[in-house]
Amino acid sequence: MTNGRRSAILLIALAAPLTAAGGAKNIILFLGDAAGIPTLNAASIHGYNEPGRLFIYRMPHIALSETSAASQWVTDSAAGMTAIVTGEKTHNGVLSQSAAALRGKKDGEPLKTILEYAEERGLSTGVVSNSSVLSATPAACYAHVNDRKDTAAVFRNLLAPRFGDGIDVVIGAGRDDVLEARRGARAALDNAGLTWYDTLDSVPPQARRATVLFDGEFDLDQATQRAIDILSRNEKGFFLMVESNLHTEDLIRGLDRTVAFDKSIRRTVERMQGTGTLILFTADHSYDLRIHDGRKGRPLLDSSDRAVQTDDVDTIRLKTVRRDDDHTAEEVLVAAQGPGAERVRGVFPNTEIFRIMLDAFGWSRQPQKAGQAKRTTVD
Image (cartoon, rainbow, N blue to C red; front, side, top):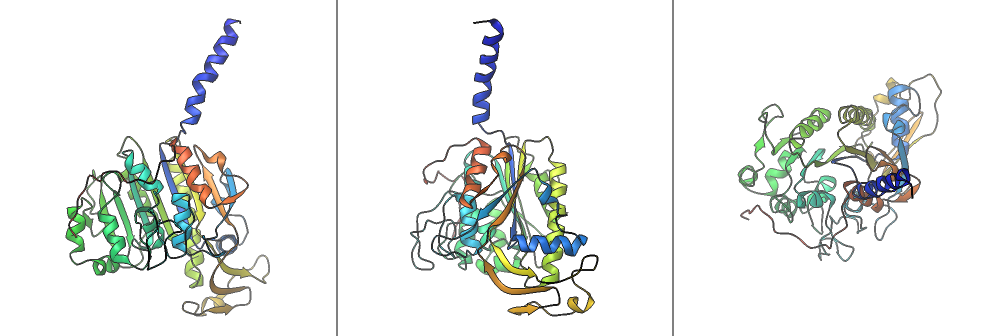
């Protein structure tokens, strides 16, 4: 064997474990709640008068994800997000418990989430959402509850992590939900090391953990960038989930939010270049919105359409758009960039997204057994 051949074989042998070990230091999962392809299409035309203009369509790896729940074709956010962050399907209304759960009646086995894998290994973790931080999408990352509406139990799970020292950054809406979930919620968060700050600007420059809660609308992109600032202080890396509620029951707000969320994803991709960060976009489920008419070169929604009240209305039919206030079962987009993104291709079940993230970190799937939490709380 020649020296050149020996060198080539040695290089291949050395490279193999590196590939197997993943390569992502960080993962940022952007979750568009109800952002089915019909919503993305409408948002692009609404925002740019042209289809296909959203940044996520131009990410280098795209696929379609099947979104059914364990027992129904149409999923809710609890079951949809559980599949994404645990790799297992469960029933609607159930948060990160197995399909042995009966909503509101019986617990299933707790399913270990990608956030908990990260906590177990010493990475920093966070959730950001313009829905309540106790609502289904963020809660599925850290809570194991048989009914998504049991916010008191969700909050107890937030304070009592099963792995590591628990979630590090919680930013979002739902201030009143948290206060209602538990008496003395602020003190409980402070005691758990998740100091509650009233504004993003009030978080100390070198903070490594923080909670910021809002009553209503806030700048989701600013919150995302602030969360990245905090989590990036951990040299081991981080996992961050960012949700935007893109339901279009309020039609204009939903489409405007979709365009804004896409811009935030683009900004984050540009910021995280060269940092070993896998960035993913997907939706937990689709939504019954369709463009049924309209002419190119004209706004998708004119002034008379914009004046129509759509929120709290089950069905609307405008000149160009119709909308029924229902989740739907068709596949949703997955878009990715960064280490491990090449696995995003074709059509696969939503459970595959968990495996893509786990493989990107280079971790093996572990038994669903909780480690010893470092933090203690008082009920």
